[in-house]
Length: 167
Image (cartoon, rainbow, N blue to C red; front, side, top):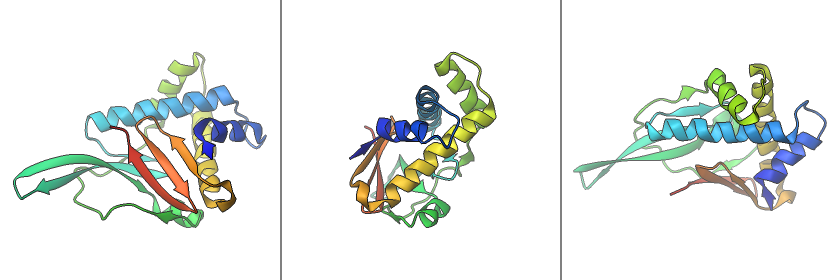
């Protein structure tokens, strides 16, 4: 089983990216805080090339409308890593996803890191994490992958990906 910490450690130790484990962890935590903030306000957000986190509306027995969240892998991510998406059928979206505000994510990362880091470094770290997620999910030899996003968990087994939101 591959966990979040193991994934971040593998990115840091790969030598392909000029970023350490502490920085990667802070970027990951900042992403969690950023998405949680948007979910609280029922705002949809696009996480780079990975996924859209959206709010959907379901009608119960034609009377009450219930808002819930959905995690939709991007088609480009699915195609790039030849993955299978176990997402539900697409109900009506409350809002279209907003692109990730890298300036805000950089500020959240700086707050966690306690030192100045450039927007380009945060963007590069996030791209490295997303690439590592895709590569890990595409590698059937890895077995089960369980990545904790804080607001939920991404599960992958045999290239089949699903996301479970935290209660």
